[in-house]
Amino acid sequence: AVVTDDEIVDVDDNFMDPQLCATMACDIYKHLRASEAKKRPSTDFMERVQKDINSSMRAILIDWLVEVAEEYRLVPDTMYLAVNYIDRYLSGNTMDRQRLQLLGVACMMIAAKYEEICAPQVEEFCYITDNTYFKEEVLQMESAVLNYLKFEMTAPTAKCFLRRFVRAAQGVNEV
Ligand SMILES: *[C@@H]1O[C@H](CO)[C@@H](O)[C@H](O)[C@H]1NC(C)=O
Image (cartoon, rainbow, N blue to C red; front, top):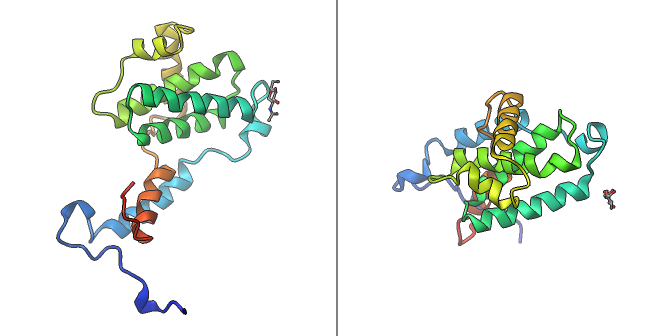
């Protein structure tokens, strides 16, 4: 069957539910798309910037962070945001393998403060690393990440676009 224009459903036609922001949704997503280009990590930082770590180590870190997120019942947005911070930081700073996990918990902590109603305390982030790092180290890393990212912590993630795509695809379950 040929898809004609009139078969395309307008996803912004629900004016009854104020949560859907029907009149603004399109502009909001245009802004997010533009903002994504500015808050995006480089695609080749592993080859270009990093010397001690590689993509397998990053993958192991992220798998572990998924477990941390489950343990503390964090929302998926926190997880996606933490990965955005990690990759943006790694795009401009070399990191050794001993401190990669420290970067991971520090970014998770920042993302949790941004996204969660009740974020876990710094002590809990130390505990989850089996107290590999001291509280002061986590706070120092947190400060290094915040400064490097110039406190620009609002970043659209894949999750945020996925919500809209699922709606456009008329998925039944909102993500
Ligand atoms: C990353 O480094 C580790 C340890 O040197 C090695 O076992 C692993 O195969 C490397 N992974 C990649 C993708 O190069």
